[in-house]
Image 1 (cartoon, helix red, strand yellow):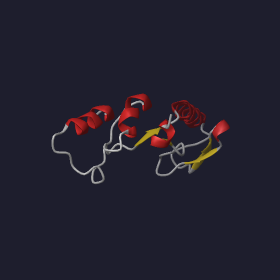
Image 2 (image 1 turned 30 degrees about the horizontal axis):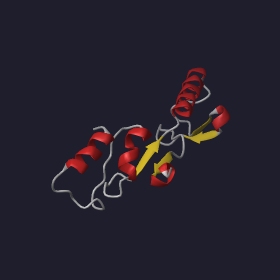
Image 3 (image 1 turned 120 degrees about the vertical axis):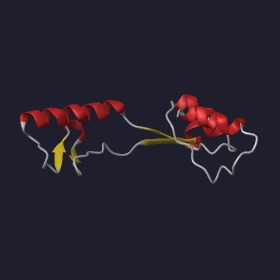
Length: 108
């Protein structure tokens, strides 16, 4: 469910649970989440962004290296050009840290 809809429903609820006891998870842009993150009574206090350009770059580099035989199903790491070396763990590669935004990022 979209995160702004969840945060909005929390605000509209007549009987709200303690915001410290629940977690809202969903998809939304930073701008759509901003008012809910800034609202201290709302349990939505963080948002997360992945770098989609780097994710795409890593995906293409991995696909190319698989096609050319540089890596295969047994590989444990691969070089992702400008992103450096990435580990392959159980056939999964993680780009790295996400950008977490919270009330401090919207303090303007």
